[in-house]
Length: 317
Image 1 (cartoon, helix red, strand yellow):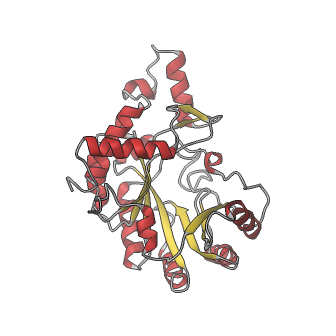
Image 2 (tube, one colour):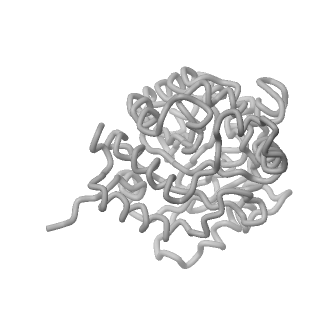
Image 3 (spheres, rainbow, N blue to C red):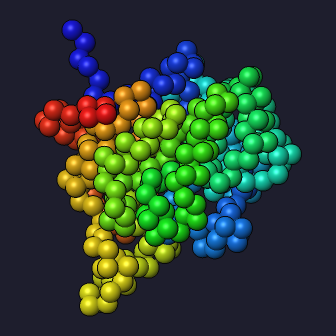
């Protein structure tokens, strides 16, 4: 008898769209962010530094086509029938006039073996005209949105300088899903120290939206961020009541994160695919937490944690 899956994997989700392997190729589309240019705010989100997820094969100044060709060369030979998805990951991938977006997306889709787009964006950067264009585009190519949810708790969103409320996230997910555009939600665990909701509350609220998949990772303190400044300030002067001290924040240990993740997944709607369980940032940028566990090893640890605790996705949904 086949062993029941502990959670729904992203590969199962993609198998519903592609009869072959597909690989996401991160590409920098030259976008900025309304939380950096003053439209919504300045300085960006408290935890964010885009350089932490630039691919090793990427290089500043390359066109979208050149980036994708280099990405294909990087992954060549892994699978016999590999196809690709252009992943507009850097900053806010829908934050530009529609004619500019159209040019960038069409350039990506013109690269041989690129079968679709995954576009990372904010919930406040999805006007109806962009969604209607993406709906039309999805009739000839795979199109998926990756929306920065981060948290469903407005107190957390304010503390992290997100400059939007969860109601905007709910609205964006609902409008996209209504047009047949699948949505992946990016979620950070470990932010509950800044708000009132626990991991299972976050999962329950997110499960009420028509979201297709989630990417989950631990809160990481990266050099060059506002969060890093607050953390280092609290470490240098334990008597100073920084934001960290006031809110009782501390970077999650590996055991704490396994507990929070297990709590989240066991309250998550069973049909939501899980694309990522943990994040690994470049060592020279990461301040804390430093677990020394790579994603593949973490997956085994997490599956062991679920099994030992009798947990599985949706158990308490």
